[in-house]
Amino acid sequence: MLSPFEGGIINIPAVLIVMLMSMILIRGTKESSFVNGVIVLLKVSVVLIFIAVGWQYIRPENYTPYIPDNTGSFGEFGFSGIIRAAAIVFFAYIGFDAVSTAAQEAKNPKRDMPIGILASLGICTLLYVLFAHVMTGVVNYEAFAGKDGIAPVAVAVEAMGPADASGMITPEYPWLNNAILLAILAGYASVILVMLMGQSRVFFSMSKDGLVPKIFSDVHDKFRTPAKNNLFFMVLVSLFAAFVPARVVGEMTSIGTLFAFILVCIGVLILRNKMPEAPRAFRTPLVPFVPIAGILVCLFMMVFLPMDTWIRLIVWMMIGFDLYLFYGMKHSVQNKGMFSNGNYKVVAGSGLGMVLALVIVAFVHHSDPDIDDTALFYFSLVFAAIHAMVYAYSFKRARV
Image (cartoon, rainbow, N blue to C red):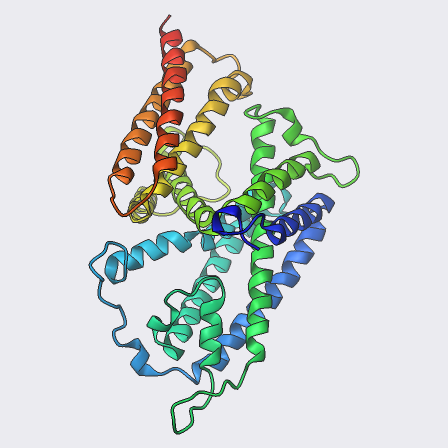
């Protein structure tokens, strides 16, 4: 099923899987951990089978050239293509940081969190590399042109078999296509499960500090989970899943995650400087090199993402500014007793900077003659104009 922007009406399967995963999370961490464990075992097994089976059908000539030359367009093959692809698929790595949001539910977070994140990161990276190596070795990369979703995997599976005198290949493992399909769907399910859990736990902590309404930290009497929190995100994420194209959601997720990682790296630098003696469950090594390198690498990949993705990032950030400006600042427990009009000045000033950035990016994107972005362009200008007035009023009030 496709979204309205992809020629469909509503993506019902996506909505159903979000609802199912949310119900599992409401039941409790133990139940969701068991389901996630079964799903991970299934998809890793299929991936290993694909790698083992496909390895014997690798044709070395398919690796020439190993990095195809750039077509002349930025982001199409060559070095820029590699970086853009890395930025687009970066969402494949967001499940690892989501593990940290469940630290409150770990028996020994000081030991278990770093081991869980780093070990799973290393294993999955190795599987990603091997899977891609086999796919592009079995079939020349040009055969994947125009193939979306799981279609490229099907093309590779169809090429796993002996060739007759005419060069026609007879697939020896046609069943692997269905297995890969099952593994991919299972993979989507497990990622949705982990991310829904992570998002609800983030809002749970924010609610405890008063940055968002108390309803997000209400715990269910029977299941002892933030059920209302889970239900809210079930509805919100279902709406995105139903009506927003997968490409747009994927790019938004990637650029949002990259930017969040930049903020985390900046936070490490600030806290190490301002609170060097604070107790730390996990101490980042090689500071300031690691956080500075993290900032540069993430920013470098963000630059290679499409401009319309930057527009959506800025709009999303401004919505966050609105929430903090009109609710979080006044209700924050950490800010209690320290609230002043000067806070408005800082946030409103930053908001005005976001307005300027949105206008600039919108005009740069609109200047490309090959892109029809009339609706997005005018939406950006109207959104920026409304927020310019709101932030200017807040900034003026802070000076009174």
